[in-house]
Image (cartoon, rainbow, N blue to C red; front, side, top):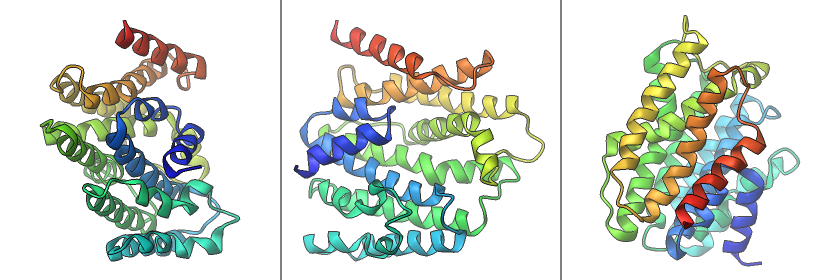
Length: 275
């Protein structure tokens, strides 16, 4: 099984939101976005696992960051996840295989993906070291930028690299922030079980939902400005539709979108695109 096939199989297992839009991307752009997504999913799983203490997470995340900064030859890919091997029984395969995902990126854009992943790993290490303490809206802005807004910036770079598509970078940050904010709204109960709270002090559920909607309003402007029939537009619409649908469902009292709801929204979108 080649890296591309294995990457798509791993995507299918790890993300119902992003597998379809990534699988629909053309050639080298698919490789670049899949590489970026899986590298970042790999470090996200380290940040989220309840089976490692915070100091171990900090050490592993900073190790990955430094290994990514060391890359100078293809053989270096194998070393990126070297320090994860001690935790083979704890960490998922998507994390243990981070070297493969880094090597999937096309040579002409790979250093940008490595840089973005290294920077995110450092930021995640900071948040793990500080036990994800979020007391103010400024803290929330920093966190959502660290783990998602910066991904919006990377995506803008990937669109520009592939076909010259230009984007509004502030709105690109809001696109990433919006998706992360919806995750925070949806996962509050689950997060509290592992002793983490991403909601600023004094905020209600409605406040967090309002924050997410403000970000998604900017995300919508980002999407509307993308060229018609572009791969960037095709990619961004599905996670945006699912994020907005999730907020709407929660506002109606549902805990989240059901798998049936997700499939219906995606099928409706893909049918519209193919009509």
